[in-house]
Image (cartoon, rainbow, N blue to C red; front, side, top):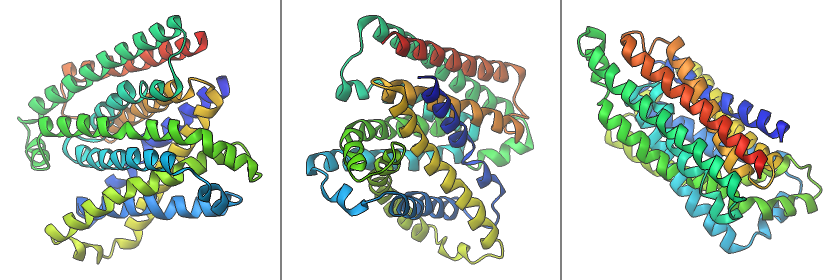
Length: 339
């Protein structure tokens, strides 16, 4: 179990940092940055990783039952839509709050979905896990409150007026929560597809950790379909295709490729952590993974001065919310040990 917890935390650190390079791109609109990111992380990186690392790639996926593939594809399409909304939420409300609300929602719902596939744990373990998730919920509410207070604080500064042109805090919060609900499809797809893909991967002579790469392939490809359609439409609607012709394209491509690799690797490491955590790995690993990413994103947001105009009251809510989320995950992990 300890190894699984460490991998889940490490995966969360990578996910919490993945969007940071986006702050340093130049000459790109929102649509340029995120369309290129999703193209790389949903298609280029997983295709290269899967075809390179998985022995018997064709046999593993060619023997996959159609009902499992369909369930994974539909759930992953919803996940892709949710992640797309997440990027939009970050544009409205910033990195730290966008992560807190989006991933907090994922923790609450996504941690429970695997029970539909794997079954319920013993009663004492279930009660402890649910208690931990309630504490996480308190943290999510506190983070949302922190964001609303920050918005009010910033309205009195010139910098805030510029930031407000990027979008509404309330709208951003709604997008983040709605996207989080849809993105829980990732947890369900992983729970449904892992058993078969693990067995097929083992038969082909692959190591245990390769199963994580195999699981990510149909999830990312299916999820990428939603994002490709949306951003192709947005690039045309806002006449942003020409923005790819910039002197900063090389630098931007490098930064966005780093984002893509971190995002993909974080998801694959989570799948491996869930395997190491055992029977309740999809639930507990998902919660630990996402909470670690929230903590990392909040710290990154503070370092990059997203909260420099916020009042002490707003920061207190933010820190209280983060503390609740961490404490909640400790309780969830303890509940897993009871199981």
